[in-house]
Length: 355
View 1 (tube, one colour):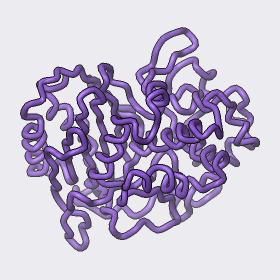
View 2 (cartoon, rainbow, N blue to C red):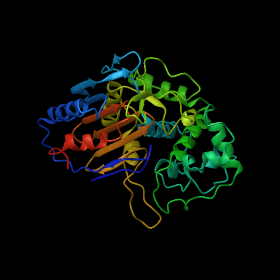
View 3 (cartoon, rainbow, N blue to C red):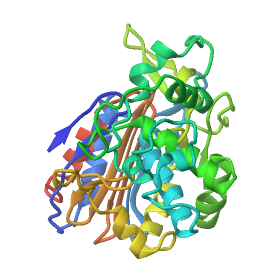
View 4 (spheres, one colour):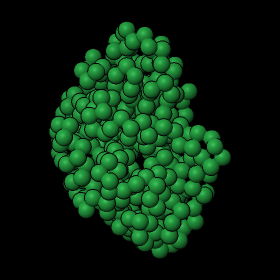
């Protein structure tokens, strides 16, 4: 089953694992090669098992101006795939005994008026916070044509306007970018470090993820990152150079490569970064006030039978990371050509192996 929930919202693919994996790398090659030839994909794909790449290929260009080709180590903005890294930072702080999942967010973000929202609610999208994308232009006095909306701006709006919740915490599940920006703020408050420095020190450096970093504007994205493209009214590609919401981090704006994501996924599978008890809780669906279960844990969509995933979509970038926790398979697709249908391509490539 496939469903889509708007720009940079969660795109869900639900799979039943069939376990006969012979030929899955060939399936991905056929699907994505054809998509590239039909101008429906521009990016990098990897299928890995137990940390080793079975199939890895780059299709298309990294920069439309220089016509530089993509490489398998090209770096992409992960868009909402960034969220599970933010959740990992929170879990590391939990293991360091610097916070608890059931702490009120006002313990760390003291100016917010939401005493009934906890860190756990932010992690599993049950907080009821209105999404900043829906309200920012109403309350922010910046210039959306040249300024960057920052975390400071976000906190001022949610602290000063006394925005009503869309629903009471745990009443229902509703995907929230706001919650994950707040989580990045909590990482900074609990650790005493910037989010960028914390994730570098405790995630990227220990795992040897040399092509990974967090970067919020106006900090300049390193030139080695693949340029995101958008499509103009004539159907031609244009460089994506600016969006005023790129001043935020936590819900997006982590950059990485397919090889680094395989390293990260393998560390999760093997328990090299977080304890098994912590991971078990992260991969447990949230329970609503009415007793019903959601399909989301701490930064991951839970597909059942040991398969977790997340997708991302932002200006010029579309991303996917899926992990078969039981058999050790990892699937990564990163696109920088404004192709929003990569989830359909993943589903097609997995047909016969997962359903």
